[in-house]
Length: 477
Image (cartoon, rainbow, N blue to C red; front, side, top):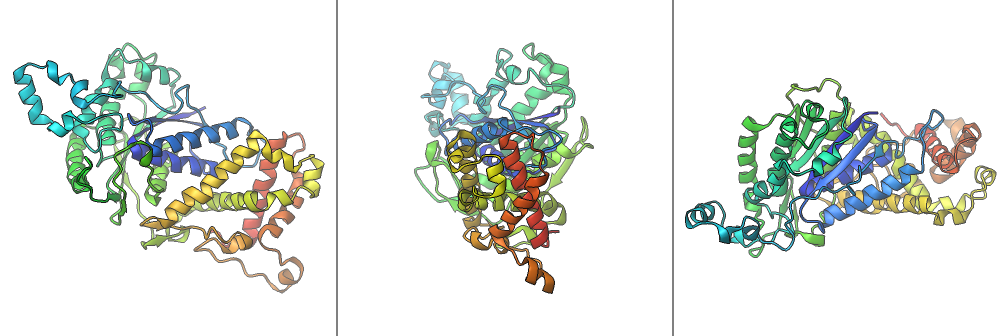
């Protein structure tokens, strides 16, 4: 059973993991049996972090009540997500309620060392509170995150205690901020030098494992704020500096780069729960890098592969048809299927309990108040009304669906035409929307293994019905 240990550093790491989790919920093949996502961020109340952790927990709870034996055709939630006892977060050095100066014990330095430190760090750096992260200062982050390289630190050792041959590591970070730009090379160095640590149970396997990474270049901007320590004008300069360092100091087997020249201007929030950026298509593309790495059997120790991402067309508002054929093949079937499932679940399911398939399994409306179905309701709402809606209003926008068009569900998928029905089709089978899905559920329920648990049965019937309905109504290529 292969595992991918996925480290998301800083706010960008959280946002990419959020998009990846939505793709996995939709049934995108992850290329690994289990993904172990871990977020590294000193700002524990960061809005991007907390909502990603909430999403991961709900996904894990849903997945724990499903089984995927030979009779289970549904791919929704098929990939196992495991936190390995971390609560999806990796604690770092104790930075709470400390300034950077207090952390490095600046006041205890001798005069000469104070002078040198003052050349490297401004007074603003020294007085910066760190419980909200490093606020775009990788020079600060590189000091604090050296905690990973402390031989006495067994946090990583505990996390990787079950690391085995065939497992992989992937690191997500931005290259233009503070936490990610500093944390990525330090974390990578720790893995590659694992044999120098006596805390790891399996250091040789870790040191020689395939390691991939994604460096996210600038893809959004920040509104000007003279009171903020984060300055958008330095993004490109910091990215160039980091790239120069990366060129000669990284030992990755696959390195992915991604950026966007069209940038939204977000509110300049330094951290805490106010830092909750809208989802962006770049984060979806970044999540595809994780999947590509997990699937690519040619990537092994010493490969040194470099990859970038591009779309087939470019527009201010993108849809699925504008992606390359290989990207559409991965994304379109899963996203369309789960979008239809989400709309069906929110707007039609409660009217179907009188159907034969529901009566046969004694499904009743009050089951929707049970934990599994409540979690499904929560996640499908986050998927459609938050994640998709945020990408649709962002710049560059990604709008694969007209999310208001659930009444004519197959006509609300942008970039795809519905199939034209022939004369006999119009006369005998002119069914559309939820009516067609109801019809397909009635057909598919007869062939689903009755020995499946109620929850497996429920997911299987709907997945098969929606797949068949999509085949009938969409020219999906």
